[in-house]
Amino acid sequence: MRKLIFTVVVFFIYATALTTLPSCNSNSTIKNDSTMNNTDTITGKAIKPKGPKPEWAPNITPEMQTVIEKLESFGTPPLPTLTPQVARTKPSPADAAMGVIKDNNIPMPPPQVDTSGKDIPVSGGTIHLRIYTPKAAMDSFPVIVYYHGGGWVIADLNTYDASAKAISEQTGAVVVSVAYRQAPEFKFPTAHNDSYAAYQWVLNNAASIKGNSKKIALVGESAGGNLAASVSMMARDNHVALPIYQVLVYPIAGYDLNTESYQKNEKAKPLDKGLMKWFFDNYLPNTAAGSDPKISLVKANLKGMPSTTIITAEYDPLQTEGKMLADEFKKAGVTVNYKNYDGVTHEFFGMAAILPEAKQAQALAAADLKNAFK
Image (cartoon, rainbow, N blue to C red; front, side, top):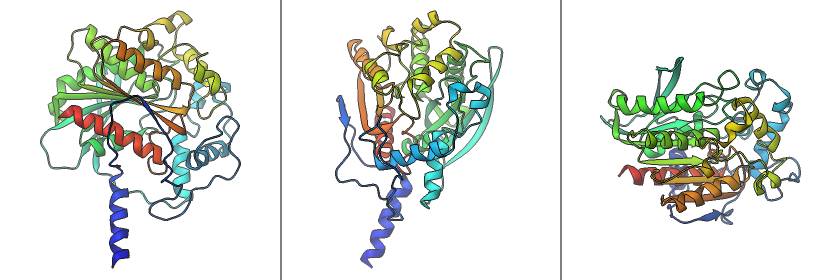
């Protein structure tokens, strides 16, 4: 009987996909917890990499290494050697994570949200929104506008579905995931303008999606983190209602490809220095655009911005600028909660089904967002 009860409790904890780690508002680095191991809580099966740790990541976690090995097993040529159109068809880190889940027979809990779609007009066209609504019987929810990553060039709503879904489930908020137009077909500032238009649409139409227009936050990953912060700046500068909070997950925050983490993680995977240069070359119309405050967030006027959580990863070229951005927010008088996660790479955040660090990061983001919604 005790064994049965234990099994049920473990399954419930996994199915909620939410850790109960508290959020603390201090600059710190999340170290690998010695009480954790690389064993899935349902199957009891260890997730073990096949080879030695890569030279560029001597302290990479076994789970993260397994995802990187899976990604490399797809045999995709370096993305900068491909056209953006071809690169978009290649397997993503999310595909690699799903492959690890399947390889290890890890069961996935049923979603606790319903999804729907909405096309909205923007300057010069339309964009699509994917709306995640909690199954809870409520008439009104907080709203989170979510911006996916991909360097403004690749990836889509499906690539980042796990993140958007987890955020909705763990915060009890409607999440509106934005399919902004991408480069090189649409150069800077198109993705930024589309992202701002989506935010304005949510402000004006929150009730139509069971949302509370007084409780709107922003979340973004990578290029999406850059977009989220830029949307807040644009709202501030245009005297539009600010989001009440923003979560920036390893945001692109600068145009300097020679920071400490760019040098340290020049050959990291899945994001390296060459790939970031390719993203910039495809999105920016010229190098001068790299100085625009919507690209170089670390040099922007950040006064009056909403309280912010910034999450970074150890093996990521963007780690240094993420920390710099947190410091600049503090200098500007903005409340910021900065956390770096050791042993993991860019794109780890959406992999909570297999990465303990992703579970922690999602729990941190959810706790900070829920606190803001109060």
